[in-house]
Length: 287
Length: 311
Image (tube, rainbow over all chains, first blue to last red; front, side, top):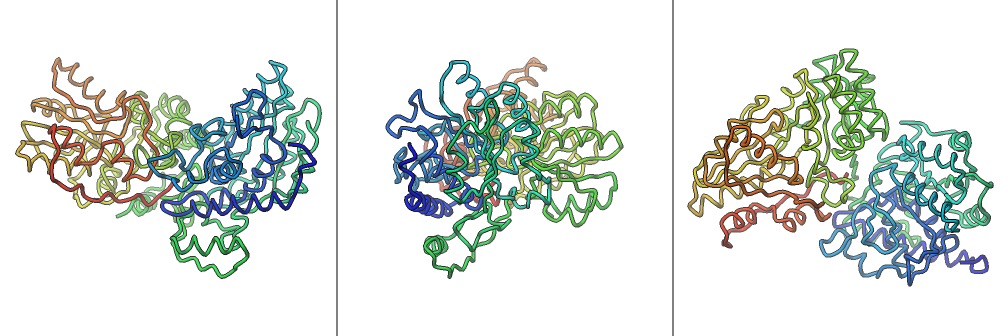
């Protein structure tokens, strides 16, 4: 997609629909609602303005590769793929059903999902391998991998960065969904990550830190690349867990949600500005 | 008594105990406040947690470590084998949502080779309780032993009241001459249903809750081999689990038996909510019994409760 298409209003409209999909999947077993809402805007932006992706042929040789290493964000990806037409919207109603393959972590039965994830700290290395081959083959595809901030606890993330730096993979982008929570805790209360940008820079990456809910900042960050010749590109996207639903925003206990039908109806209204949501279902502290 | 209550009681009574987790707090929610610096959360770092547990054990501590079963046994496998196994340190591993209990999480979270790989480590012991009552009856012995241990954590409620636990011993629920069912973990509940149904159809049926997979109760296996049919039921790959254990024991004793395994044959299971998983994969008590009988019955499968945990 090219710059002329940039239209914030349209991005907001798409993101709102994606958030509606997430809310509708947050019942009948539930999903990672709070976790995935923080990633909606970046995923919608990347598909609209950064990735070279062809909905008619998601496996085109010239496509950019997208890896969702933070598997808990997959409801945001399901919603985006449905809005893009890569999967039929009706399929989202089959969330957790035996009749489909739409469950709590990404899998390749969904067109547009390049690789399964769920075990944290795996896809930085897989993305690394893909980026290496793109360099070896002299191709131009970009490789983007979204990481959770809690996921950065896993040592393999840092191993992949060391190797990516050694191989000067400036076609590789890591985007950190920095919502400051991991499961039911604040990251800084458990295993502090800050100063994060300096850590990445010390590992040799070219780092940008932006508001992950601002399309203007996303657009500015991704407009030119590589960020620095021969350097791995990293965007730290500061985000808000539960973004879009004030009644669950920034809440440690709303990582995974399994709401009643009535609550889902209220939350759908809340997405459109109705602030009278009254959540009665048990808060789920799942891990 | 719950898992957390037992763990609290044990840790308060024995100052050597250190409770550790790789940011999996579902079962240790209140421990930080109670244990203070004897509670250690290493974040999402399964390998580092196991290495650190080995270090703590070197200093005569007994670390009881927590993570999702798949990441505890597989992500950290070489650390378990090399740091805990070679040194034979008393690190006690509690694997959360093993087997079918990972319901809709998908293959990344399916620990269905955990028994196989853990029992392959010299010095390691391996346990799989049938329900929460069984779990709290087994753990004191497991934690008290000097050996490294891996336990499939299962906090499901059933009505069954288990007998006291002895390391290396199974729990013989009943004996029979036509069919003997050997099982472990959450499928015990379905095996009980199947046993009941088979008895109603006139068969003489035995049922054994294996409990301890390493060391294994060889006598119970040899006894089961006396019945016309031995049935193994496990939420594990066919390779390396109970079916393999039975084959090894029978071969060692130069015996043979007619064995029908219920296990996952070289594939991961379909992710969905637990009751749907059991139905889809053919592991409900009714399905198991009817498979053994070779015909459909009029019996109604009792409701299968959904788990309380998502991940």
